[in-house]
Length: 199
Image (cartoon, rainbow, N blue to C red; front, side, top):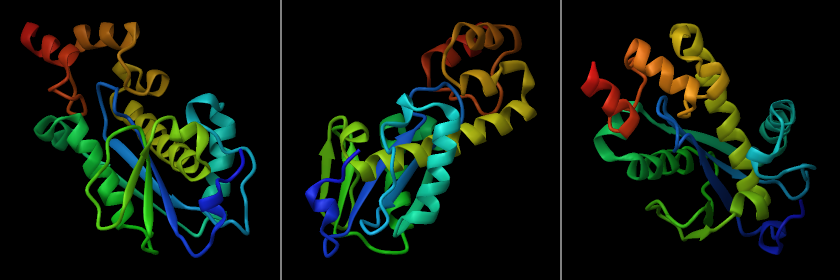
């Protein structure tokens, strides 16, 4: 993936932002903010969903060691249930950007919803595909969240979190019906709500 012209202009610091975990029925939503270093380009950046797990892990290591700055932000299951998933995602993005060691001049966010930040924010549909900094954020967020779900699998092995990462697969829904919800399930999400009503 090539870098956009603005990303190559070092006086303008652009942070790419993306999240992982809006759709699943369990676990935190994780956001990442990344300011790339145009002097140290990273080959192979693209939407994390199009990459193999091995490729994502390799690129995540390159991102951590080659960029000018990166940071992560999360919103918890409790915050998701209290605020709703959209507002919790915006909160996670705010936390990621505010945690950067360098303040960006602009923030470019994947999608069409922008968090409130103290600098200009631009939303870009398919930004995780078309903008290198957002692709990098997508990869970081997904690898971190996937690792969290693997850890949850060890704590709650009945649900298969390692395999489906919390998404509402047939196997996950079957496990929910059989075992009920665990503390990491999002009680405001319809399939979990239905499971709690029937238990």
